[in-house]
Length: 425
Image 1: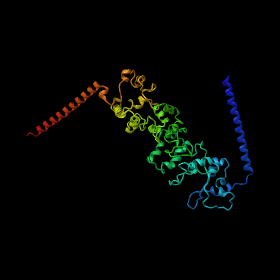
Image 2 (image 1 turned 90 degrees about the horizontal axis):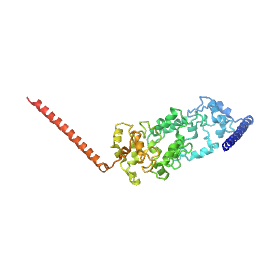
Image 3 (image 1 turned 45 degrees about the horizontal axis):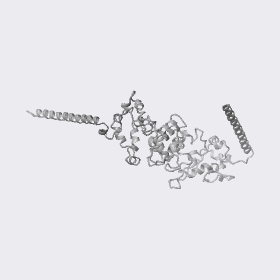
Image 4 (image 1 turned 90 degrees about the vertical axis):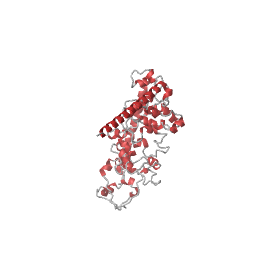
């Protein structure tokens, strides 16, 4: 049988790979052990003789203390990296103490690929463009206590990224959208999943913006550029991405139309909240206004021949009026048109296709038949849509106006008579 053979082949390959990995680890460990046994002393002991003193400071009163315990636990300490491996200008130095200022550590000696990406990033070019000092490796990874990103204590671990990036972006870095724009991540559904639930697989700064090759969102190469946002969000929300690209918005997006809404247009950017959150842009109380950003935009309506006055014609209906009074269980745009896989009414899979309307209306109105589902919602011309209903509506409108006016006149006449009665001697 084919399946058992496949399984045996896969297991055999895995054992072979595991054997090679084990051999490689043993050889690597042996080489490190031999090097440590026969290598010339690297001077680290001499360095720590001074730098493990917690009171050691430079001329500018900055601490020069290096914790031997913290370094030993770091990824560099566990790999046997010596002080002079990074501080290369001290190699072979014996006339202590050394100069106050040493050459800047060049991490690219070992991490050339990361350095190459970093140099073209917005962080690496900040100083060149007059935006201040560029971000350095130690700002994100630490100094002598660098840990691998898989370590929950590492500054680059998902659990710590908000604080690491926020050390600059919450206070020092200004954006056109205001100081709290980036800070909004902390209260977002993604930020809360990490800080409150400890869900380290939730989206972090690096998930959306990248790690070393961070670019401005407006740049074509950025994962947050408009033409890449759906696929960036789709890394985690793959099912929603599939729905989106099958819908009318996704098809236009793949067709290269720049005005089509992407994830961030509806859900926001850093401050993305759950649809159940009243502050969310996709909460039932806000859905109509969110959709209206495009569907009530006259320029877009004319450019793409869209139906007009979608918001106004909704707000005048029972659903719209009830929603305006705070009844969030009433139908909104998404209730009828769908969420991510919105389709044109002519599509047989659309919830507002004539054959599907009874079922769509039936979600809120059990037993809804074809007559109820045939009622128009977005009515631009009430007289043409239902002349008899228009006449009845007008009759009641004028009747109410006349009755209220009569009551006001009666009250004023009665008040006048009472005042006149009081003035009599």
